Length: 102
Image (cartoon, rainbow, N blue to C red; front, side):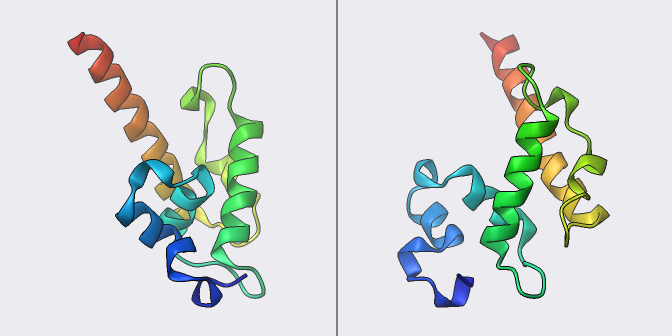
C-alpha cells in the first residue's frame, strides 16, 4: 500500500510524531528511505531493508552492518544505504556513550 493511500495514523512519520515508541523498525527505515521504487511502496522497500539488516548483522548488533549489504535491495542505492547505516552507527555510538556514562 502506498503511503498516500494509508490512514494518517498508520503513516510512519505521523506515527513517530505522535508516539515515537510505537514506531516499528520498518516505520523507522521507511522514514529514512523517504521514497520507494517504481511499483513498490516505501513500506515494502523498508521491509526488504530490515530483512537484509537482519541477515547482515549478528549478536553484536549493528557492528557488522555495511552499507554495501543494503544495496542488494532493489531501489536502494549508495545514498539510501549510507543513510540507513549512519542511523544504525549513530545508535551504536549513543549506546556506547550511555554505557560509559553509567
